[in-house]
Length: 613
Image (cartoon, rainbow, N blue to C red):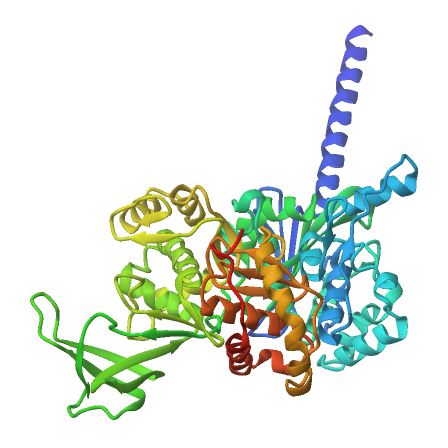
């Protein structure tokens, strides 16, 4: 009897263990994946869906046509996801495209222990410190919901509906339009709204191009972790332009669920999510995300960089590759630059031009000037100064090259002007190699902020990276962002257009100087410059380095000094940009520069002794 009882309890224990194992297996099978990813496939125009476990190991991969045929269980058409903070992105897009007034939100710093005061303090923590204010672009990056509140902005349900219905008309199918119909309902713009990932992608595709481009430029700033380290930028460089979100799983309200949605740098819409906050998911699955997504087909970033080629090598003539002098004007095809004979210098250098290089005569000598896009310039410097196939070192150098250009180049109209020289940065006269294009594209929009930077072939120093040391660090397994951090401990990796990273050191002398003259300019500007509306007295910030610029949303001007006539012109130029913020004339750099020079010619009075206080 005793043995029988023991056998019975042993069998019962075994059965219970087996049942527990089966239950655990069923629970594991039913558990949602740790990371989910959806994007629009450029080749098929369908949707690509990938899921992963907590270690980043692929669980499932599927590609669906769009509009869909009846999808299987777990497809992106039937998955449920919270909208979370993404509603703020759609309000931002509406504000930009409609040019609707969006006054800054001022943080009151609510006091007291009432639930309302506590909630306000919690929400303002995403916005600004008590007594400070936040503008539209910074509010998007910091996810300040109080700024985007529809009632505060005077946003009506009818205006919202009409705007997004017009955007939905650009979609290719009625099925696509129907899946994003929630977007036209202003009442749905709240974090708890549950939609499908496919619907979110289609809503992103309804964004007007101008507003989308503006959002993409601003959203690059979300790719960085604390102090510009690691984050999504390590794995994706400048390719991620997403708004993060954090909420709860629709099927389990107690579990945090976050991620991001937006675009890749080439405009590909993307959505991803997992357990945790949006920033936590990006930090944990950044490498997985970068490996799963297709390589972006990003054209090199536009812009205007004017480069005098061979600035310190006297040219005697430019020949066609087949012989004979090249005619002055735009060059297309193969050519040879012929230099004065020197001890160690080559006297003939072949190059190819595709319309970006112009030949002219200056004091009887030939002059070659290239007009390049920003990333095209970066790629050509990589080819001339380094080895773009050394990926990590080349990525680090590309960021330095871009930051140096923006700091040191002169500004003429809407172009940056710099020489091709060993005293600045040497530039290849030939189109960039494929490797250099890839590296420049990967780092597109990334700079170093907080200190001036430079590089040298083999001599490192304060605020100067040595290419040989970067090369050795890359070969030793260091990533490009770590190479930068080691070389520039006083600088931080940043987005070129980061509205949250712009500190302002007051420049009161420049504010007084401008204030004393602006009133006298206004009558002439109103009468003779269409579209000019006098801005409120702007805040002027002292730049430690770099070119002057203005922030229209913050009514700020950033200026290095006020010592010369060129400084006056720069201040007048940026003031005009503020006054023309709502008019197409504000985009005409030649017109703005001409007016700024006219204003500077009328200015009288003494400058501050040192340019600032």
